[in-house]
Image 1 (cartoon, rainbow, N blue to C red):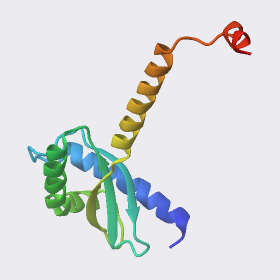
Image 2: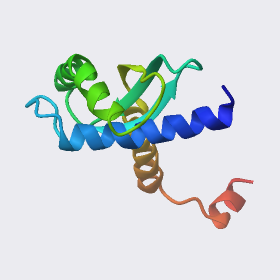
Image 3: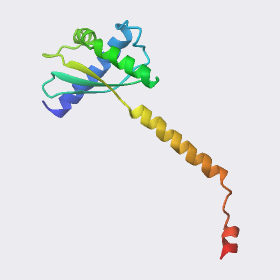
Image 4: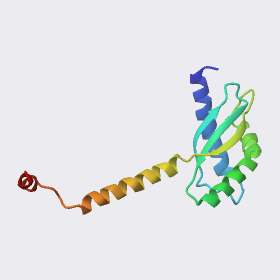
Length: 131
């Protein structure tokens, strides 16, 4: 399958899966604060990795990921009614850790900036005195 078509299918699946999660899934462990960041479909359209991210504790993330995986069939059935494909892929949900990494980097950069501000400013005059 051409990459351009596969990209369009991935984009369409992402939109439809988000819609099904928000409107049709009624699992108390799955809240609407789940974001689908990316969908990667295999070339034969039989399998799709659905990357999700959320703001929650690690224990809650594990519970939500398990709930999402158990609801994968339900989500696939409802999504397949909205998208006409010869084969609707089997969904596998994967936790996208890019948000956690971004927050970690922001925290580190904040500490660096705080440390830079706490240091006394070096002026040209003080450097001339040392020469």
